[in-house]
Length: 422
Image 1 (spheres, rainbow, N blue to C red):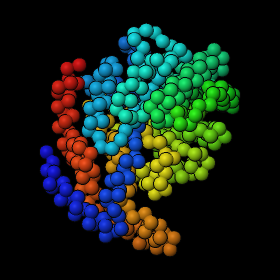
Image 2 (image 1 turned 120 degrees about the vertical axis):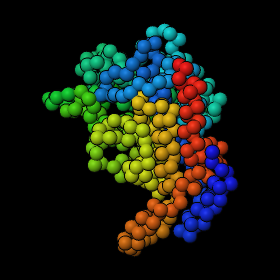
Image 3 (image 1 turned 45 degrees about the horizontal axis):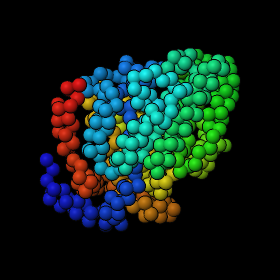
Image 4 (image 1 turned 180 degrees about the vertical axis):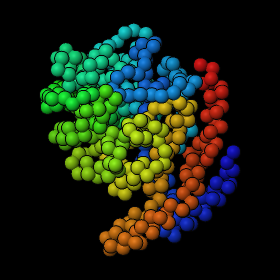
């Protein structure tokens, strides 16, 4: 158990060291109020959803590995888990829902029939907690996605089905934003693509553009709902061509004033999403981030504090992009305790942002503009050994959540008392 006096004492010492660099640690902690992370609901149950009692993930090149005990089997269990997660996190969170997580009451409600009534329980739950919701159309795990094409399908009945689904999801997201008083980001991602080399790439992309135009034909107030479109490099069964490529969606976002979603698992391994943020924001008003950890491919591992996540956070902080960047997570790991996965991944993202806030950015820019590149690199290296951990522990203490390794015991107890009994 962390000793409160020791945490405060360590923080005061760290505060002095950062002050010598011109960094105000109190101000950095206060600024973390602007870092609101949208938790992805699908980590609770391995992207199964609750359309049917035996719903499972399928299609789209998405895989969840493992079968750790304690998976949420219904929405009450899911909410119980989410509440436990948020009790272990400092700062503010939102919740990001997929359309398959509606409350359908055991009835068969197809994707082109969903309405806000199936999500009113989630809206009420979020309102009680003073938090916002985000939303996603679910264009996978459905018989009409088995062909490998949804919004870009050449079968008109299939295409129209998915157009109606996305249109309904946008309406639901707008109602979420309206009732909660904070704009809901609605994200559209589709698995469409070809396993082997296609001939008519253009045909499918023409249809995708047409479908997006139709699905997004109704304009909702930005205060209620914001549209995002998400690209992907490839998927299992769609290795040769992905219809919704980054080039396609970036062009669509710019032309139609939509958000571009940047998932750092959806690009070539040598590409850095942190580098794309300021590039995209020259031409679109906002971006949506899906922070994840790809290992060799888009494998959606639990986020850890790696260099890629640090760069993403640094670009947001250095440029004061808080109001233009929407931060979401996207990973799913069923091989370890799912609550632990949530807490590790979310804290890693938060740590990256707090670490970025403890950088003397103005001084580093001066060094850069004066071509003092040795000094710039030296300063960046020195920052790595500063007592950042003491500042993070104090931030957790101020937020009345477990400090240091204390959250591990909390999750172990929750597993023993709740998860293992399911």
